[in-house]
Length: 348
Image 1 (tube, rainbow, N blue to C red):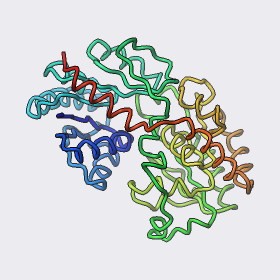
Image 2: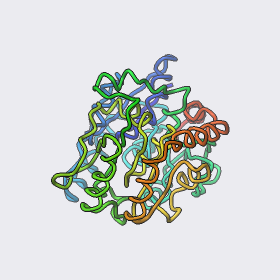
Image 3: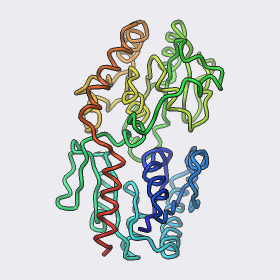
Image 4: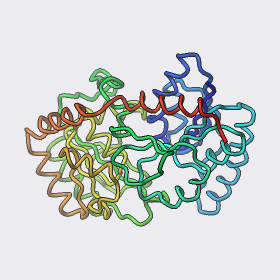
């Protein structure tokens, strides 16, 4: 097979990396079209994945429009040169349009219900939708569902083993208590109707938790002056080792909250839409008690202190994680099966 992956966000690197490695190891031809956004290319390099950068994230609305217009043209050119059987991506118009124009099959991986606008835009051109079974969108006979959570494509115990020695390389003692705070900028198209922690809320939370252990902060954009804690000290490729040994994750991010929960770390997800049940993944995680979704920062603050001072919280989360894993198949293996079906089925 000839398989092209479109990777435009750090989370895409994690989602696809094991599929990319498996396909390459099995002798298939793999190409990765990347985007300079946050640590996307740094992660690809850290994992030894060859890639070609087709665009860089714009800093304004006008720049983003220009970037995606240029990326559309570059992706079509790149695809024609590589001549794939299948293009795998998240819900990215440039990748789906390139597949339709070049005769490749498109596999779109999505677990995000509120990305309906993009789904509608690309829907007529998508050959296969790959979604979790709990995803509420219905794409008919083009939909292929798996019983897991997308992040288990790289965080399932068969795919990832937390390594305390990796943390010791950064002078972090995994046996000592520490907490991770994650704050996003709310600048992405799917974030703009949400509100996360206020500057005062961030400062108050960090200060309160610092009385119980070390506070590491991962943030997009600037932080309030004088906030307690220190920046996350590990390289992006090692962030999951940090999350796995943390005593608590609190943040307004969706992805990192999911990751921490799946690693058995007590997790609080706090933003204005956290209790809307708009995202099926958090309904699923809530069923197992793996994430506390809270819509106001005062309640989130109180719950964070409660968990930070509860010595049994980590054991409870480990038991809940084990229960989830009992019912979860190999997510990457399922994706590879869909890619093979798409290659056998041919493009349009």
